Length: 273
Image (cartoon, rainbow, N blue to C red; front, top):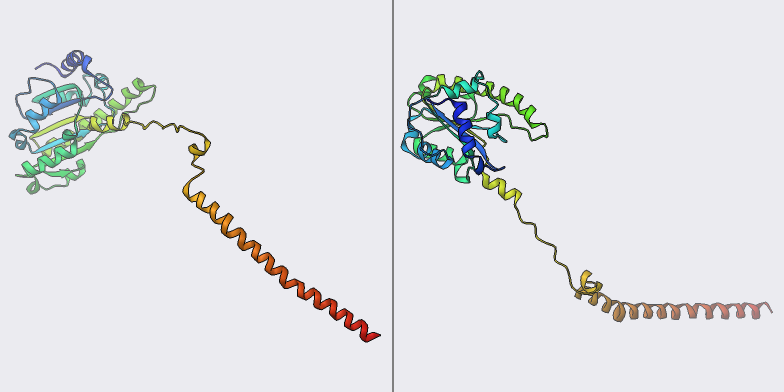
């Protein structure tokens, strides 16, 4: 069997022209010796292993998600790394350097499909799997969702990835080896499980162009709106007359008071005389 590193490098070169910034590698390996798909594509892997009846032969299907994973990151694995040795020693292995997963190939869709077809039970961690008793495992099927640390996107990506891939590979290999003891017949699929459709939807969402309003300032800012015209009409023809009538009423009330005061003064003057 061709070594994992050699086959990955050869496949990466052959598929380099098809790679894009929205794609990530997909690696699938199994503890069972099974024929691998003739084509190294995500559709071929899912059609051959996930959509066939053979997927129910596995005790567990382990879905490993690592956001930001690229083919160049996996090429940094050394032959002595635990993850490299784990993949290279698998009975069946296939690598897809540039995989663009659709929404139908998301982890949620795969989980629901396996639960329906195989009656698989979902597990979220290695500790949860180790907590199972032998009688719980015997005759049952499981899906294990593992999340590896996300790859950074900083400018110093290469130096960062060498460290992250090494640490992630050792941790991931240890977790999968622990699961293999509980589930001797297992299938592992390792990729960035974020669907390409959701990435493109966020990045290519069209921005509605601003419409330029033709006309003067009154039309641009809609100053002469129906509400404003009605308010002006009420102010001019209703409020102003009411204010004027009120002023006149107050004037008529004050006039008798001034006359009464004058008459009272004349009366007092005559009385004093």
